[in-house]
Length: 67
Image 1 (cartoon, rainbow, N blue to C red):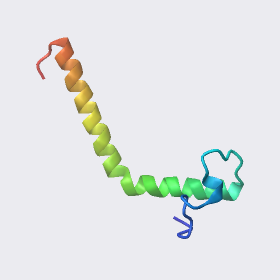
Image 2 (cartoon, rainbow, N blue to C red):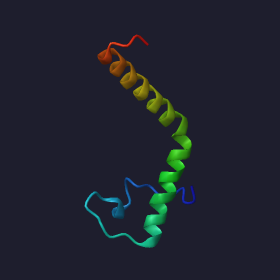
Image 3 (cartoon, helix red, strand yellow):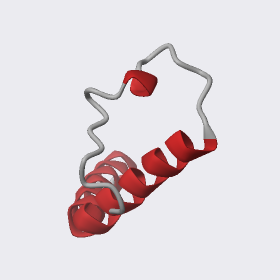
Image 4 (cartoon, rainbow, N blue to C red):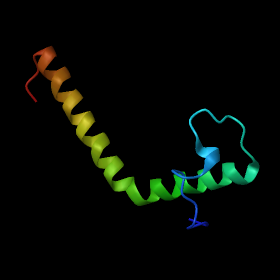
Protein backbone atom coordinates (compact mmCIF):
# COMPACT_ATOMS: atom_id res chain seq x y z
CA UNK A 1 0.00 0.00 0.00
CA UNK A 2 1.55 3.25 -1.11
CA UNK A 3 0.32 5.68 1.57
CA UNK A 4 0.46 4.27 5.10
CA UNK A 5 -0.90 7.57 6.49
CA UNK A 6 -4.18 7.23 4.58
CA UNK A 7 -7.09 6.34 6.89
CA UNK A 8 -10.46 5.97 5.13
CA UNK A 9 -12.30 6.42 8.43
CA UNK A 10 -10.98 9.95 8.85
CA UNK A 11 -10.60 11.05 5.21
CA UNK A 12 -13.34 13.56 4.41
CA UNK A 13 -13.71 12.35 0.83
CA UNK A 14 -14.57 8.82 1.99
CA UNK A 15 -17.95 9.89 3.33
CA UNK A 16 -20.98 7.86 2.35
CA UNK A 17 -22.63 10.62 0.35
CA UNK A 18 -19.55 11.92 -1.46
CA UNK A 19 -19.76 11.18 -5.18
CA UNK A 20 -17.03 13.49 -6.46
CA UNK A 21 -13.46 12.26 -6.12
CA UNK A 22 -10.18 13.37 -7.59
CA UNK A 23 -7.97 10.97 -9.49
CA UNK A 24 -5.58 10.84 -6.53
CA UNK A 25 -8.42 9.94 -4.15
CA UNK A 26 -9.62 7.19 -6.46
CA UNK A 27 -6.08 5.82 -6.65
CA UNK A 28 -5.82 5.80 -2.83
CA UNK A 29 -9.06 3.84 -2.53
CA UNK A 30 -8.07 1.44 -5.31
CA UNK A 31 -4.70 0.82 -3.66
CA UNK A 32 -6.41 0.16 -0.33
CA UNK A 33 -8.87 -2.28 -1.91
CA UNK A 34 -6.05 -4.10 -3.68
CA UNK A 35 -4.02 -4.29 -0.46
CA UNK A 36 -7.00 -5.61 1.51
CA UNK A 37 -7.71 -8.25 -1.11
CA UNK A 38 -4.13 -9.52 -1.16
CA UNK A 39 -4.06 -9.64 2.64
CA UNK A 40 -7.35 -11.56 2.94
CA UNK A 41 -7.51 -13.70 -0.20
CA UNK A 42 -7.24 -16.98 1.72
CA UNK A 43 -10.08 -16.00 4.09
CA UNK A 44 -12.22 -14.97 1.12
CA UNK A 45 -11.56 -18.30 -0.62
CA UNK A 46 -12.34 -20.22 2.56
CA UNK A 47 -15.62 -18.33 3.01
CA UNK A 48 -16.60 -19.02 -0.60
CA UNK A 49 -15.82 -22.74 -0.20
CA UNK A 50 -17.93 -22.94 2.96
CA UNK A 51 -20.85 -21.17 1.26
CA UNK A 52 -20.55 -23.39 -1.83
CA UNK A 53 -20.50 -26.59 0.23
CA UNK A 54 -23.45 -25.47 2.35
CA UNK A 55 -25.53 -24.57 -0.70
CA UNK A 56 -24.55 -27.78 -2.49
CA UNK A 57 -25.46 -29.90 0.53
CA UNK A 58 -28.82 -28.15 0.79
CA UNK A 59 -29.50 -28.60 -2.92
CA UNK A 60 -28.62 -32.29 -2.79
CA UNK A 61 -30.79 -32.74 0.29
CA UNK A 62 -33.73 -31.03 -1.46
CA UNK A 63 -33.23 -33.26 -4.52
CA UNK A 64 -33.04 -36.36 -2.33
CA UNK A 65 -29.51 -37.19 -3.44
CA UNK A 66 -27.18 -38.77 -0.93
CA UNK A 67 -23.84 -36.99 -1.09
